[in-house]
Length: 367
Picture (spheres, one colour):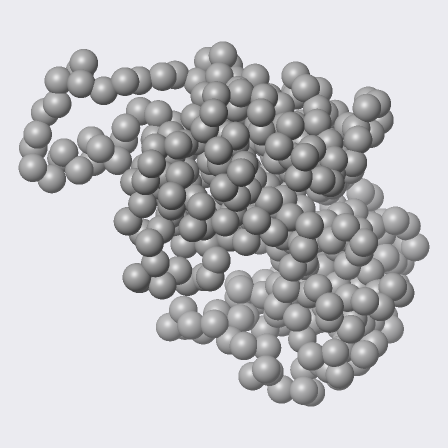
């Protein structure tokens, strides 16, 4: 689903609308000019949330005049409700909406929220598989050896390639589906977990934005599907002899600390899984993770998200063995905003035509 797939002629008017971008990238004048003309005089305002010195602009620093008449809002961070009373559509630049939970505008059913689901999938999946392969082939160890010029004998370490190993994906959305695609190319068996049952071919299809040639749009890659909202259901999934667990869930009250001591013990009871978290830091009980790593209960872990962020220098996670930590950068890619502008244009077109939007947020489940 991309704007390029939709005919440009006949786009409806959005002349009564004002679209405000508060995003971490400079304005794209050519895109703004084209969109304004295409949608009957849509007025577009753009604020780059990153200063030249790379510091972040807080939404509270913005002039209230910027919000005058705004009806369409593209952002990651929430704005005070009193500044956006007329907003009817929010396009999030993130795949989740955890920062908006409880916000008056989010609770307003008439306001449509859409995520950028699918925009981050290729690069995050590469981060997951890259972290996994780096661990399996001891790249950090050899990187350290290069500092002293030490040549270790080829029989000193245990190596295991990915073929016939099992990847479990906790949250089989757009990111999870691309992880499955890459893992399948490595010869891994895929087990998928979703909150709701996906027992039919139709229910297994992905209706979110998808970068062409990526993901698992038809839901055909998993060898087995699991589902449920309870910890017992999650535990049953984790008991399936997983070698690699990928956490790609939205953060809600239901999913906070979905992986704790009990779950890590399960993961360590069979094949000693490697855990990769690209969801939110709150998905894992970090004290329990440190303990599991220090005792060798699991083979290793990779975190692109922590709780809190930034992670304090004195936090014990920094010294845990067999752990990779990156500063919430797995979503970064030079083509991120090309993809996101594609999602926005698609949704503007559908708004103008009165058609259903893509990546609409489920406000009960928060994804």
